[in-house]
Each structure stands twice: as C-alpha cells, then as structure tokens.
Length: 242
Image (tube, rainbow, N blue to C red; front, top):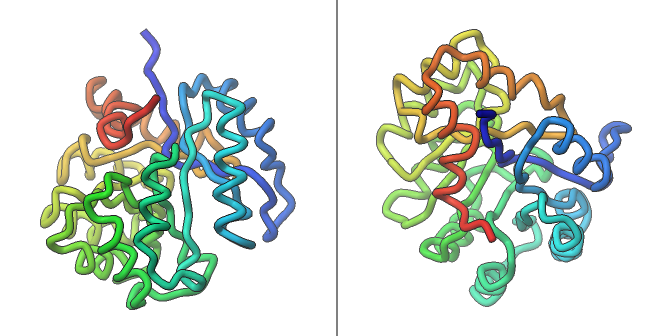
C-alpha cells in the first residue's frame, strides 16, 4: 500500500527573488504528480507585500481546491499586537501560522515575536518559523518556555541539527520540518535522538525540487511505521483537517 503523504510546507504566487513557476495551478499539478494527498500552503503575497491581502488570497485559492490547506502569515514589522486579529485567524479556516524572518529581516530577539507567541498560545494554531541560523532555534525555544504552543522549526540543516535536537529534548512541543535534512543519515539521527513522531515532511515546493526532500525520507533507513508518521501521521495530529 502506498504511503499517504501530506506536505507541510508549500507556497504559491509570485516569488520576487527569481523566476519560478509558482502558480496555484502548477502547485496542484505538482502535488498530484507526486501523489500528495494534502498540502499546507500560503500566498507569497503575504510574505513580500501585504500579509492581510496574502491571507485573503490564501483562503480564496484553497477554497477552490480541496488538496490545499490554508496557512496564515503575519509580517511582524507591521504587527502591533492585536488579540482580535489572532482570534480571527483561529475562527477562520487557517490551520497553521507561518513566520518568515529570513525574508523580512527581523531578528529572533524581537519584541513583536514575543507578543505574538503569547497571543497565539493556547489558540490551537501550530506556529512554523524559520530557524536557519545558529542560535535562532535556541531563542525561539526560550520564547516558547511555559507556553502551550506547538512550534515547528523549518530550514534546520546539517549544521544546526545538534541545536534543534537539544531544544527538542527539552520541549516536547517542538517539531521539525524536514526539507533541508539532506545529509546521508540526517533522518536516521533525528529519529534516534528525538523520535520520528517529532518530524514533519515538507518539500518547500515549488521553491525547491519536491523529490529531494521526499527521497531523503523515503530512502532513509527507518521503519515503515516511522515513515508513515513523518509523511502524514504527525501533521494529522497537529492539524485538524476538514
């Protein structure tokens, strides 16, 4: 029986940094080609232009295709702390909140991030955040201490994996998205050190090639049940799909 696959990390829209086909139609065709059951996604307008307009576009596009699951984003450079806005996200069809410090240039030692994490704690939306530089994951974990929030770290690679393992051991509500875990034994090491139940498959499509992160998990020397958890089981636990 083929594995069920849910992609926790995809995008659509205009990517200003290079010419890439990231239309919703292309994303859906890519997912179907690779037999992906569902994909969490968002409009890149929310990253690079206006996050409220981007969120509206995400809802509209996902409403037209049941394969796509809407993810909200907030640009912390334009966010002043508003409980009602966070509550609106919870009441909408969004299933996750995603932040992009790598594109927007704000540091982890940033008061708006602290405010937002307190506001979304207990709301029920997992938070995915990029932690690609040394110390970023540690700072995120410090901000989350004592908060009832499920955190998903993305863009963790070979050089920051030991940092991720250390904070995941200390906080069972921290998870890791796998698209940059491309070292020969990266998936195996993570499964051994923190458990397969803490890993979520993501491809970063269509900004990166789907097959590279997919094959890193598929060809890893772990059990079939562990692959099932990484590819779909874990994200099903974190996100309430329709």
